[in-house]
Image (tube, rainbow, N blue to C red; front, top):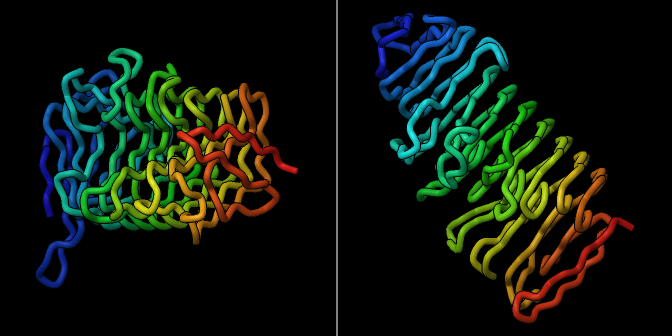
Length: 329
């Protein structure tokens, strides 16, 4: 068990049968004028961290291990603000120092980035996870992220069983990358969230499913349902992008019940594979999405087989030319 940063933390130890159980910590975010500035790096492992109402301004990253709960007094009541300098390359909440993270919950708080003052930085995220499993992020307000709100990456171990629900993503300036990036993950659920004002024009979109050119990446069983998207830049509100054939297969993608408005496209799904016949065993189910006020098209589909529920299928496969827009019949 690792716990650093004793300043402003009240530790409550629970002892029994000769060993220490998971710790409870209370972080006081209302010390001076309802703000607390924390200059040291916080490392959490086997800890339940409770935030009081107020704002905690972090000058360094929050590093998480396994069996961690971070819970506030409510969205807008407990605020974690990124107070770091422009040169800091780390994301605000990260598990990079650990080989993997098991059992993580973040709920009932706000995370504030500093895109409005420092601008775009593609790889500085509010939350980044590598090899994480059994993760629940709910009732969290993520705003002003410079890169992504949440980034699910790959460092040798896969992400699995990730739930992101009932949360709000507000890019504020649209000078960010994506609200959520999925580079690797199995059994990912993104439901009942709000996405607003995200993504600069040369980035993918609010939700981007995009494994790198790495045959070890796994992207499977992804559900994106009952979310609301508005004022989204980039390619589309929801993007699925496969960069080369027979490297990373993205399968069992379910996109339904979403409300999308004021975007370039509603849904963008594209493979850069040159032979669509090689892409077998794929399954995409897209239905009952309301897409309004789009600038280019409702749905864009390229080089994808196994698409169900009323969408046509077709592709051009010459020099990556693929401009077919499919409307729901």
